[in-house]
Amino acid sequence: QAGRSSFRRNVCSSPSRPQSCMSAWVIDQYGTNGVLRCTDEIVIPAFNSANEVLIKVNAAGLNPLDVSMRGGYGATLLNLRRDPLSVMNTCSEFPLILGRDLSGVVVDCGSGVTHFAPGDEVWAAIPPWKQGSLAEYVTLTEYEVSHKPKSLSHVEAASIPYVANTALSALVSAGGLCRENASDKRVLITGASGGVGTFSIQLLKAWGAHVTVTCSQNAEGLVRGLGADEVVDYTAGDVAEQLDVMEKFDFILDNVGGDTEQWASGLLKPWSGAKHVTLVSPLLLNTDSMGLLDGMFRALFSLHNRAFQNVISNGVFYRWAFYAPDGPALDDVCRLVDTGKILPVVEAQFSFAQVPQAFQKLEDGHSRGKTVIKVA
Ligand code: NDP
Image (cartoon, rainbow, N blue to C red; front, side):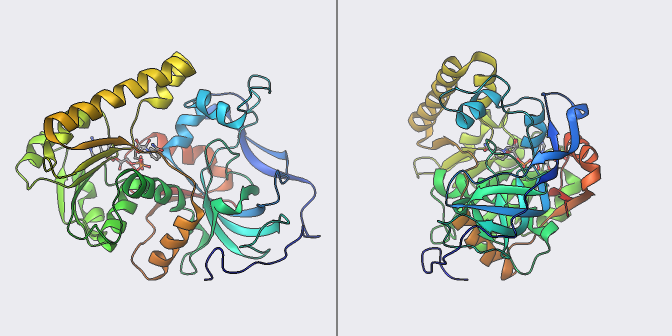
């Protein structure tokens, strides 16, 4: 595969671009599963800029965020991102299309697109402020898109992008880990049996790290099969006590939050640059419940306090991490997938007609990898 900047194609808007409406699952208000509505009257998205591609979706992956967003989670910050000047009406996010992962085929390219052409098979993680993948077509910038691994089906490919971009944001951007420095690191992943965890185990093993995980007893076979070196069953007693007898860690990736915040820093090697990076922050909950300014202030105050306490008491770093769109990062993941270093972990597959059942599956919890919808 050619590098992103190594070639340029003159691609103009294709005459084969579909002109009419498309099918999609939408919500018109926030709520429980009953708000999900299937319609074939959504206008196929137009380009907002010359660097966008129109993708026909073959498969869509769901994430816990989709269930939370269905209920209104994050609406305050996401609406600000959708409409920074707040010039649109209240509730203008509706009809809202959920679904964060996609695997599909490019059908049209803006005039400024250099890396993709109609017919290319692609995968992507869709930012939560954009319309999602539970639809026939999605428009994204080419920066957000990557060529799909050739070794995977569309359903398998749709299980990876969002958790991959999230894990890379946490491990690399927030945590400073990479292929070159991970091989002598002891890493703890909490909540390792879900989407982010099953991807992170494989990535860290591909980078040569020693990986300890926490999960339920019935997920031990799965996580060991993906490469986990040591497995702690958090249902078999006090998880902090079980981890405390182990050699200390260089890095903790926290997918669980809650109590973990109380004991995680004590498990890190003191005064060695060790890091605790959590994906579970109160930022969006706070801005939803307290409003933008108060919520952000309260969240950043608590982040600052915890980070400060950790540094002065143990010399360890504490950070929050968030999903970030990054097509070039998915190019790297594609190579790891096509060389067999990262496998998709698809726990459940649903048809497009079964989207409400797929949401229910996620809402029931206890994920073991990913839930994917076959769209086409
Ligand atoms: P999943 O729902 O796929 O996985 C969560 C896993 O954790 C499940 O397998 C669950 O299985 C297990 N689990 C639950 N409680 C515990 C516990 N106390 N100890 C150990 N394991 C536990 O979620 P994801 O992997 O997709 O996401 C992980 C977390 O990261 C979520 O909280 C999610 O909201 C957050 N996230 C944040 C992002 C951000 O931008 N900040 C982006 C993506 C995810 P079982 O209950 O059977 O043990």
